[in-house]
Length: 552
Image (cartoon, rainbow, N blue to C red; front, side):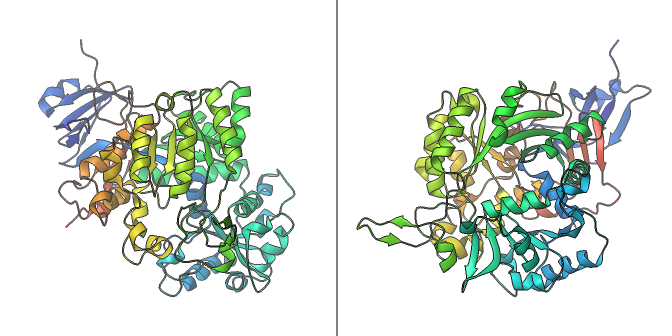
């Protein structure tokens, strides 16, 4: 006698996203596994007394989205503190921060859980501002701006890329002895309030959430993620409190999605000491890659590029100087190394000796060149599935070498929000390089493994897919199917999960997203499509059917 299914989805448009993509009407799930695909009449015999049957009413069903590059703690911070990601002006950002000052003190430093002597309730924090989109300014928030929010409490606003932040006078005074001077911007001999790279790290340490607060932050972010159809994330985890929060939530049965933890290189020795290799873990929490950096960001003008930035301010230019052929100093800003190349080479050697996957942030073309050269020297780049995160300005030659070495391009299609004429890329790089950023079509043509993620800017796969499909130039643009595959199978493959995730096929885990409308039928409006349901391991973890309206 055939065992009944736990869950049946019927009357759907179920895309396998295999190659080629196939479409069926119904799917049966048992013990978190896909056990049957076909027409409704072919699986109705699997309905038992305790089987849940969901009529999809013609909705589109896809493999669950796997966000291959996230920072759920950053997302959770925006949900808990001031969310500056949607403000449209400098004034709007200051108003949002001021609203925090008027509200209850919610904490936000390590001391909130008794781990240090910090003053956690003192800080006013905002996350995700993007000055390049503002109508009333195109430069960073300054000390003078944030002093208008408060002259008695420390105020910090993190830029969307988290490579740049802004501080008021109180915050600058509090952290003065710890901020590396080379990463603090000055004007007329006074700090502007803008800090970059290592100085941002000092700030993040000062306001880091302790274990209980971090669990709240991660839980809020995970709930948000599944509402966007995300069933798995590869989180770039800097803090042990975040890793602990994931494991605590999973142990309590309160983690609604799968997590692959890409630990920062600081934890390389610790992972070895406790015997946790790449891919160790269970169904919901696994050890991922070792994460490191080469350069910074385009927004902060710290990504390392061969040719100088178009918009150069004198203070930013002082970050990096190079000797010209005649021995004179060239102060044109070409970005900076976040991790010294010798130190990065040592990290790569140690991780390679331990047979660990590597995940290295490289945005500018010079950074990609140096990072790729290091990864090419490892014992088995393809077998290790080493990854270059972002790879925004990769050249044709670099893509060909990545393909030869089997190195994954972990990229963010939502970054095309900055690729239009007059946008951030043009402001920083100029017109010609703007059109050479994030060339997803070239990546696939070169046969480079492609995995899509959001970097939580914002976390929204449908928005990312929309930008990939509607990108400004042909070399940047993908078909609907290609873009969805990068956000499903691409992430699964980058995480050694292609045998259990990433497509809708018998034997795979039942991680699915149900959409109100078909991306294929609305290729110019994919960002407007609502998520109707999210299913993880056969369990309904999000149901938005009552709120969804559908495209008209």
